[in-house]
Image (cartoon, rainbow, N blue to C red; front, side, top):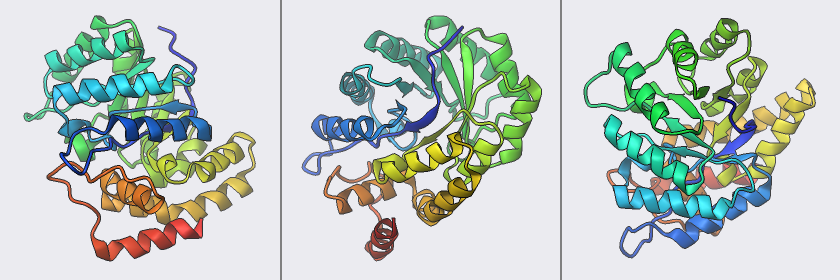
Length: 294
């Protein structure tokens, strides 16, 4: 199945919560998405790891999906994370996302029991069969506990018609090279590991899925434009300026660090959902300094 033209910087918004009652703050979510679209992001991907999808109730998940898609208003492609502990729940969310206007759904296989390859294939097949929009396979063993090797990712894209792209977040750039090798570059893959962005584009990545544009979109987009122009010297210079902050965001946990950074920039999106905790006060000055250096 031919999917939407998706590439470049795919921005992942965090999910704002009100401080008064820990409910989803739809108004702040709209504000954040408007900032991301206006900044020039090439796509918006709500309800990923940075969006704390795993910590939302079904009602909250639907609210965030609808609010996000309405705020984007089809100005750029949207990739909605629909991962759930069960296949039934993932199918239900995938159908909801499609009805609400999503262009792509992103699926991370999450399970209490470690899934076999046969179970993973069946899981993705059931989701893909239930909808008509493309599916992005998301490999992130650090959060899901399930590591899908390149050969399995290619099998999913080969055997299931509307599995058309991959987000690779294992942190191993060799896997990206392997994806390119196995498909002769025909399977689009997206980098999901912030510190690997420069190497990922060199390996042929179609784009970079990242929450970093929530805090410094202009710098992220300028780096990408240097990559697209083939100016390796400029791209490398820009990336290494970004790298200390990218590492800080990843090390502290994306919901925690991005929300702290947004508060420093004057957009209070509340605290992360428990059991996640706000950024430790002792780390705030470091984050403030890293942002100021940009």
